[in-house]
Image (cartoon, rainbow, N blue to C red; front, side, top):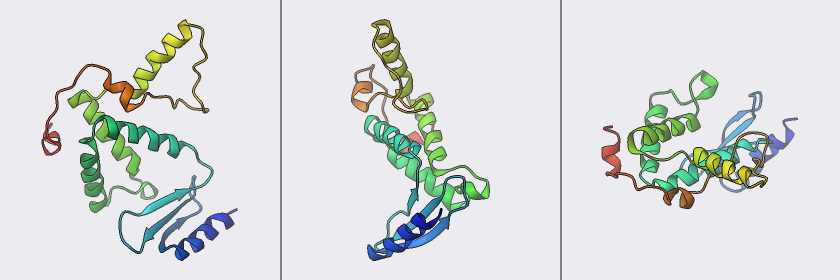
Length: 165
């Protein structure tokens, strides 16, 4: 069952990607690769569509609130430096750190919930008799950054000030 993952890890070397970690016995098998040129490591999973939806969601929030990106990077770097960013050792995931920063932005800086805005849209569509079911087997519908920006304006401050609360 792990043959495709091992093959991808071997093939990555042809493209300048070094195998950092191979977690084939995890609930969701993960291959971690690192470019010879540097940059952040690349985690690959197989047969799991939820990370694609999660990536789309984070991208929409980053477009809606560009100051969130440097704060997320700072928090994730801090967590990694302090050894508390590895799920397989009992800590929370990189994505969970991102969600905590997002929650902070929602509570302290008025960033709207893209899921709640989509729920309002679904309710309006259902009232008109339109089908508005989520496209997958889990709740994954959210509005785009452009749709969310049509809402009320928010108070803004510099990214470095955001960490102060």
